[in-house]
Image (tube, rainbow, N blue to C red):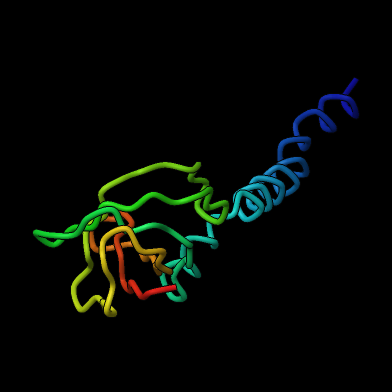
Length: 113
């Protein structure tokens, strides 16, 4: 009986490292480090420039799997220091998206395709 009580009393000490290790692995596997690389390198996507003005661009783009976006038409802000090429409304463009200070994606570069 004493051996059984001793075994039960020590079980949490031996089980805790295994649980902590698996929790840490699950957080790593969830891709939490992926956001960091997106911010450094940006995400490139083909789009059509529908309109542009007031620090925003309205674009239509296909799926962007790197950030989990489906095809859509949307307004995106230009980030500070954005590089804008000689683009015209209705033109196919390549855009580079980065996360801004607010954590939302914006356009860091927009060039003709």
